Image (cartoon, rainbow, N blue to C red):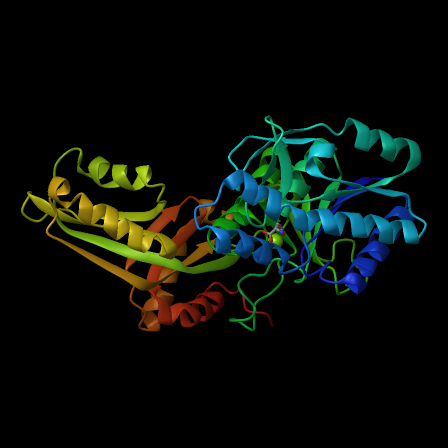
Amino acid sequence: MARLVLKFGGTSVGDIERIKNVARKVKQEVDAGHQVAVVVSAMSGVTNQLVDYCRSISKLHDAREYDAVVASGEQVTSGLLAIALQDLGIPARSWQGWQIPIITDDTHAKARIQRIDTTEVAKRMDETGEVAVVAGFQGVSERARIATLGRGGSDTSAVALAAALNAERCDIYTDVDGVYTTDPRIVSKARKIPRITYEEMLEMASQGAKVLQTRSVEMAMKHRVRVQVLSTFEQAPGSDYPGTLVVDEDEIVEQELVSGIAYSRDEAKVTLVGVEDRPGVAARIFGPLTDAAINVDMIVQNVSEDGKTTDMTFTVGKADLDRTVQVLEKAKGELNFRRLISDANVSKVSVIGVGMRSHAGVAQRMFKALADRGINIQVISTSEIKVSVLVAEEYTELALRALHTAYGLDAA
Ligand code: ASP
Ligand code: MG
């Protein structure tokens, strides 16, 4: 017998038939003798609709009331799934965040979980085998207000619950059957990755792969929760782990040099031409951006040719570009740059793999593969297990295919 947390995303609970299908899946695990807690998302499309309602009344709405509205989608699905389980003869009870409780900080709309008191839920699991059906995406702040965890936050609810319940595993059921070497809609030879490390999954998620919320991976890594990503709709026959397992490095026997290739079109490039080359300039440029809560990602500064001025290039999210330009133009007098150039037509492509730690030449292979296709690299950044390049957006697909082949990831 094991204790499991199962999480079902929006498409998995998208209508009544699908909710009944989820109930049957949960029943299978219960029948196999497991103690089960389930975390559900809202029906697909519902959260978007609720967000739109708030925006259509006021663009600058109160975040506490936004949370009161958008958390409601999960209330509906948790109740419906509990009914569906009871209908199959499985004892089940729904739980809202505040009922458990899942305590968060009060950063409304993107709150962080601080602690979860699982005493009552665990007691019922032990005593009567009752299935807890927990509304994902929501908790309650110390001030007793409903708080949501940011879009995609049900993944984080599930992993946090698995950590608190000391579960054997957290299964994230979704509409894809695992984590792929790259986006299979673009690269038809992409393969499902059987096992990936926390570190790699974290880079994949933060570099643009959308299967798991980044925060949920951070949480899994911190608490060493074994996570599996798998499909609600396909039954992979004959495997203990039909999906992708996200685990510790020592659970992985054969490690590829590069495990996956992520991309993000959500990038914009800004270059400040002719900034002064002296101490304190970077701090003065990025200070106002930090104050405006604009996240800066890749940064390069050229060496100055004349010892007086240099160019500074960096990237921000596409949605932040207009504000970035505004903030910098406003500070132009103080920053003393000659010209600002911006470009929203860029993509970031990243190759990721813990194998890089011990092997040389990974970056070189990337540069060569891109050069062979005539793709110009605009900015490069690296970390211990990742190399990212910025390229013109129209080359995204070509770059992904070239790199997938270059690192030997193509399916046979
Ligand atoms: N329903 C929320 C969203 O759409 C949370 C989630 O599904 O993870 O963002
Ligand atoms: Mg999701």
